[in-house]
Length: 183
Image 1: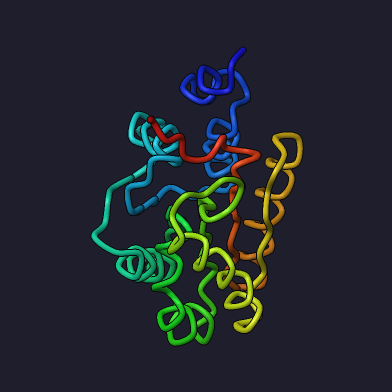
Image 2 (image 1 turned 180 degrees about the horizontal axis):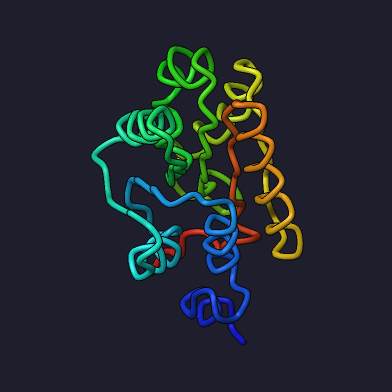
């Protein structure tokens, strides 16, 4: 089956987005604010279609982080979906809210800026994302293979909740197929 076909079929067939959806459900993460992203579109569509989830677009990544942080303080678990360039706006909200207040913020970041990226700005942000995560002492994993996705996602969510610390799950184009550019 072609990658593009597999990516549009959802959780029925073990696609990357189906695995993420099921792992979120299993870990009782039901609130999913996001900033729209082409790579994450199959996941976003499936989240919207599932009544278990409250899923909605936000104007900025900081807004999504604030919503998930407030939800955690109110007893509800959430995760934020964004792309690499959106992560570039988060250093302040991570350092001033999520880290010091021990919010187990789950971030799914579709990785741009690598593997044939045409946009120089995306490439710059991609090179700075991991050093920013390291400087904040935030757990992060780059997932490149479907066979490791469920294990890393599940264990990272459990660790984030148990240790009350944020985690970033970077979804590499080797996993998602990346952003496809039409000529």
